[in-house]
Length: 435
Image (tube, rainbow, N blue to C red; front, top):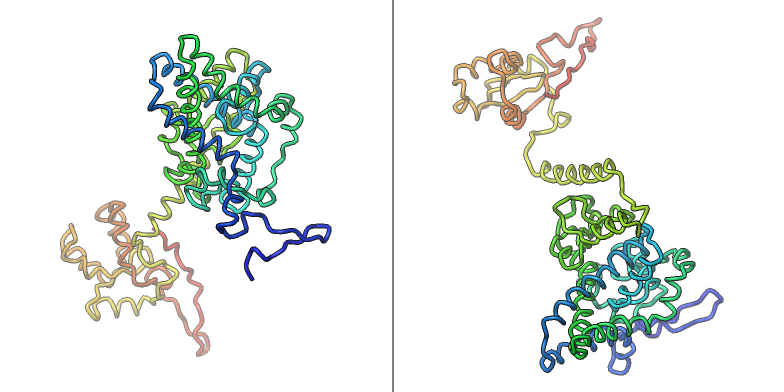
């Protein structure tokens, strides 16, 4: 039975055809798999813009304004859509909200409500089937595939957007999104550049090309920031810190930190890390345009960092030879230890209740062969621990790799006694065998 013939059952018992994303691609239905509205704004219009660059010269003032507007529309996404509305990491005054909603529309990435709803689902269901742009579905899918292919909305994880539905700015922009995006992405930059007589150049460079770069930079957060970089705070999921993606996305590239502490208005917490979005929000706070800037407590941040460092250390530690664990070693009586000390090419000595075979080290012993041979078949704890020399940490580590047994009782003691012809334990206790 093919997937295309399987019918799903709705809650009222009725049946419906599976979503097009569950259907195989065929010559007759391939166009149904495409989200044509997104293709127009993400593929076809940018393609037209790049073709137009061969016929429309780039003027200096237009280039300067294009870079300036790139920064502003980028902030519309990073400071607005992302940190203000998706994560409510700070509060913005009405003028700042209007500005961020306007330039955010100029980035051509959907309405605030649509963008934030998907992003909240992404955080809640990271790397799962319910993640709308899961990198587990492929690098290209997480970058742009999820935009240009039709997705089954019922498969995307739930996200609470009650706060967004009650926000008048969000509601207005969502209702009038096409007007907003055409006005702010294309008409506005063309009119500005028309001031110096380059309206067409403004449309091409400050409008279409600029919007394409903002889109692709943002898409890198969904793809490359889940693919390349470090994971200093957690490695259970895919988000990573990457200064390159931070550079092109106004600081959004420190994605591992962001997924661990999503309500923090900062993505970069070190002074040397590039996060102009954080700097702008801080400046707006100083000017009274923003307030209630949220930061995770440094104690919690450092705990996360330390735990991840410990996990990495444990992985490295597991690759090294630390000697046979004590609970896996055979137990020797004192007499058995003495009798075996020089047998079968062994050279056994006891240190802190642990028996070591030092036969391979006799010729390499820095203190000479005579000294180490004098400890064979004896308790050399005192000799090893400051009795003759206060051995280094390296010496302790090397000694641990020579473990072959544990001494019953931990030292030279009479362990067993006769009690009416029956041997019983004398009560001697094992010593702490760690050193």
